[in-house]
Image (cartoon, rainbow, N blue to C red; front, side, top):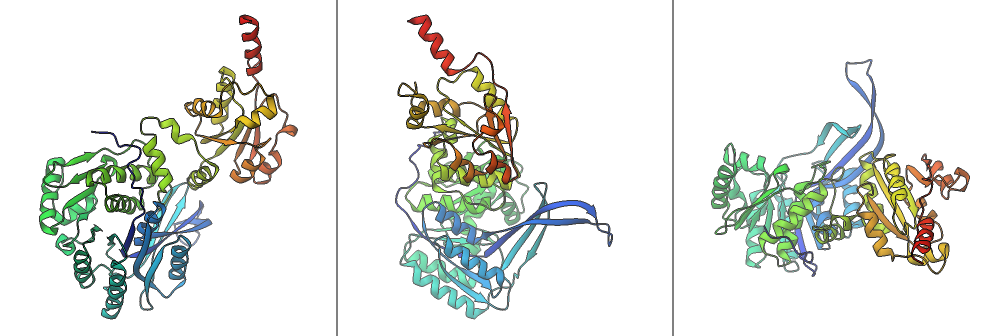
Length: 485
């Protein structure tokens, strides 16, 4: 299989209309420490509540994060959840033509999380088809936007929006405008989506639509062929979980893309990310095969995040650049690292922070960094840039430029992220990142560690790693000068 060029993501922003079931995903994090005296059930004590966009709204949020201009059409209830959804959509720069239906609740999925495990999910929703008046209004608003967009996405979660009464005339208008249509299907009868160019079902949805066992790639190919005939679509992109995804695009041979090797933390909303990335890439001009590879990379990123999440364009581009050099993905700007740390904290992971010049990396440094990494789940190394090294060490330092020093640090397995800073101390970064553990070498005392008060004030701790005698950059330079002078 050919490798994906690092510059494969379309450069020009695309304009996309998303129509479908708008939802809100709510996460209640907490702990269980006792059994209720009222009944033999655990008592869940909530400590944090978090709302994120779900369903079609999550598709729109992913498209926006990828740099697309997006308009979202759907329905919410006349309730607090519906108002939150509207606020979040607009805060993320997504245009909307959301209808309000006082007779139905905004679809909300509430998940209770303890010790990073989902205990139960509570759904508030209505699956009744939209009333004729709302369908007519939604259709009229959507049709008025078709002339201004480059493609149409339908996100069907079987909550009553994506009925034939809406989709048949909408797809006909989109096809008349020569717009490609992409659908994440839920209906058992894929003829429901005639007019779409590409459908992106998962294995369960393919099995539900065909009734087949899908024991191997041969049976999957047969099922895909049947669904392509039924829907009259050009292609079928089937997401297969840990097995990756498969693209069926006759007359080309099926393409089976293995999942990217990484820790899978949460698959919630991964199908939304796949749909958004594939559609954005295809509408942007990439062939379906290349769009599928991009979607596969995006899926590998999003399943490493906690809960319903999006993949930002810079994340995807960074992964594309680093396919053959994984260490590059460890090099982050302050904003990129702050976003990454949100995901680590949502997973309940402990963040460790240290800093230094790391000029002429040696065994003492490696020992120090390994000890630091052992204190948590994620190690950030803040690296002095060249200008700040000169201020600290004199005009003859650093011996190696900052990009080379950063690359060597990033190549170490014990280092998770490297971020450059140019100030005399890393205090601003410490205040921004709020690490759980701040680490310095044994040549410091606790009283002289910059950031100690700030870390301890936020509940963290400071740890000193014993200094390795006889090993330092200054001593190495001195020995080299003596030996080769």
